Length: 107
Image (tube, rainbow, N blue to C red; front, side, top):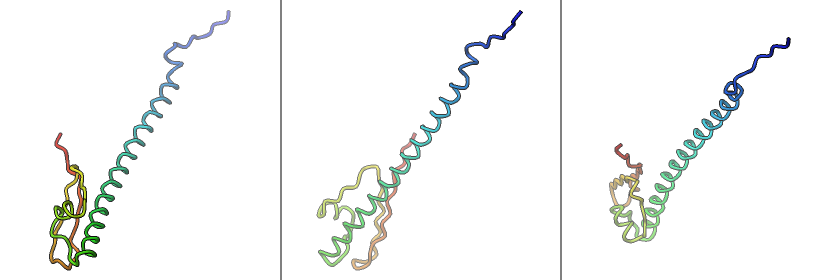
């Protein structure tokens, strides 16, 4: 008599399920990494745009702008609502300290 053990159907699919879950986990991790990189680049681009507008103002007027609002009104600078801008001006002939941060959303 030939006795063969029958493997339950669910057991045969376990390797395929594990591989699927592994690929899904890798995809989720990579998506979050791309999202983080995009966010960091967006923040850096916003800060560079502000610095460029400040330097343009200095080149045209001979003094640094008194505020970010001045740049928005006179030079068309746009800063998204998701950013906080710290603009610390010491004197009209010294480059201001510019820091851009992303707003934290309360959960």
